[in-house]
Length: 127
Image (cartoon, rainbow, N blue to C red; front, side, top):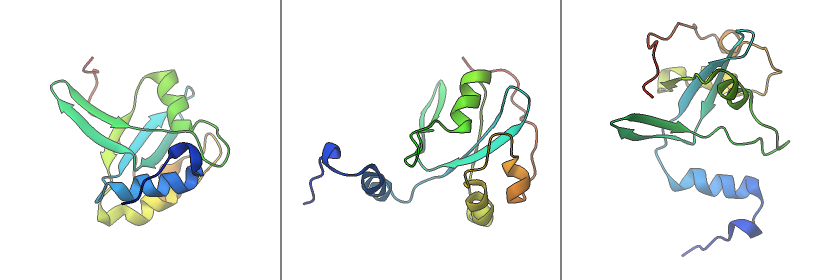
């Protein structure tokens, strides 16, 4: 049996072990708007459903392994307190991959990936 001490392994290698531990793994598409209304779309593999009453979906916009900076998604959620979660299916895997590129703030990943942005039909938060 493999035993891993997270303190003694590079983050990138630990990330790979964690991703391989849960399979198949759902991928969330998190879409947000920044303070100026610019859209952001990003896939998250650290995602799951944690409850139905109240409805709780959790995704983890962890810091970038390369630069230790926060992602635009997290910045936007902290500013606006809103996020829309969708599920990536096989038909849009290529678009998901295109949206995962590290674009500068303000770049529209919907346009870059060829996906169509729609308004959310949920207008009130559950909490």
